[in-house]
Length: 251
Image (cartoon, rainbow, N blue to C red; front, side, top):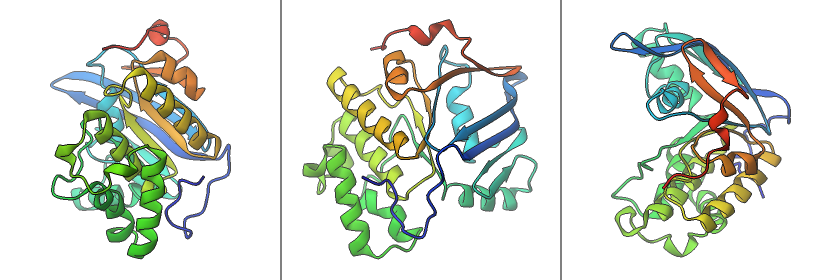
């Protein structure tokens, strides 16, 4: 099984840093969410960010791909660098290039409402990467099969359950063959059986070289991925120091 949608994309070597963060910081209304964050995530590695709600974990993920602009620092992946200090035009260009290497699945899924499930998954490979439609469709159908939603290929997002939308969003993110996958509460809309299947599938992707950074409250999910566990703070990133990493799933 491969998560790459394009044969022209070089596969990172396991152990190679595919996401590098230096000095990343963000504040809102005088309140520091996180500051001076330094981070390296390697191919074939998973990192789970845990901790109480409202501590900036989702904002941190969004800053990693330029959906929000950090106040300071930079993010790099395989030659693409996003500078918080860049001019607005340059920042937008850097963010677009970085998103070729770093994919994100939002908690709200953010599927294109006017497109079918299959068209959603084909969108990036066809319109961003220039993959021929026939090849993109074959790959999209394989991913939907892996996510156990192949039977929903012709459906529209409003016809899907929350769990189905989440799995389609995951397939869409994987379709462009990212080196790094960012996940915001990936198990929140899934029952226990689906969580187990998703954990197993993502663990297989990690084994094959995908790097994952996930925000989660699900300790069992983090354990299944064999993930490093960390929490954000005003003094950077603290790894292995969060007692809540043993908390159970939240309803």
